[in-house]
Image (cartoon, rainbow, N blue to C red):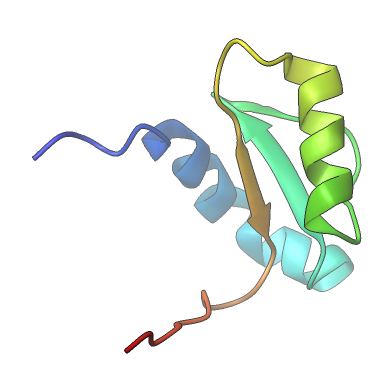
Length: 76
């Protein structure tokens, strides 16, 4: 199985999650490698736009909502 392409970004998210929960719970953060885009965003669309402006469109970046636990969705 291939490694997660966002493993670096997820490590950064885990490192700062508790801090971000205190001040930005429910908002979206943008991360590429170990770089966090400035600011937190109310919507996914705003975060995605900020990610494109900060990092461009040639490499991937992570947009993730700040929650204590990730939501689980069931599809049948």
